[in-house]
Length: 321
Image 1 (spheres, helix red, strand yellow):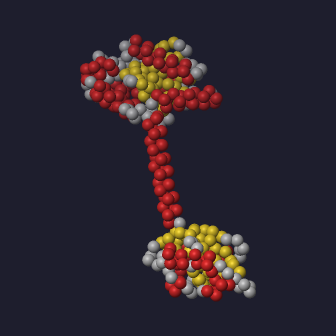
Image 2 (cartoon, one colour):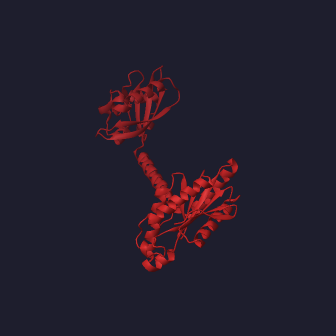
Image 3 (cartoon, helix red, strand yellow):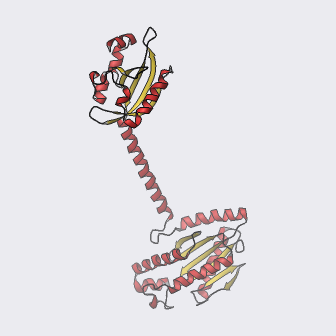
């Protein structure tokens, strides 16, 4: 050992390195010398490793890569770095960042200098950071969902609907595509709350949300507009098709056996519905929304529990129960 270190003229530096140090035969990969850190990090004394191929210290699945790394290092005059896993004397698997390079030690003789840095703590820190990033990403996802979801009904909220409507309107305007809006207002909801209490009213809104979600298509954007008002953004949908969807939704609400429905003024829970479409009922998203809203008022004025379509400012009664 000392002959090689004396030839290399860096005995003290090599022995005192914090990184594990090996001098390896260029042909056989046999360990010729080690420093003090080998015992500190891996638990091996010089006697335990001298004359052994360095590949014997690697975890089996990493041995071929280690031998390949040493083969490449023989032909280079600058260090090659990679990560591997060595097995300590007590059986621990130690992640190591390894650097190897060929080194002349005089009279044409070469060895491969191999330095290994224990990166166990670095890996633990990276795992903690990765876990923190995952937790942060999950929290951000939940916050994003909360910011766009109505807490009571779990439908999309007004903010999400407005942003989506503006984006859809811009898309349809650019590509000359249609969309429709179906606006709902639950009939006599104040009466329901006053008679049965607000908890029952909240439960009614949740139940209504379930009915609407079950009837809407996968491409429809269903949102709670506010209070007892709901809205459906029916993408790529002409007015006539939207009216059919609106009537199906109205009928589903009409037939649903909600609690205390028999005590409502109409003897059932029902909704007044308005339908408007782009571009026939407005050239802006606000105009289309206003047309649908006005159609709801017309449904209420005509007796409730019906669908009214807004078309070129002319309100036309479509269905009545």
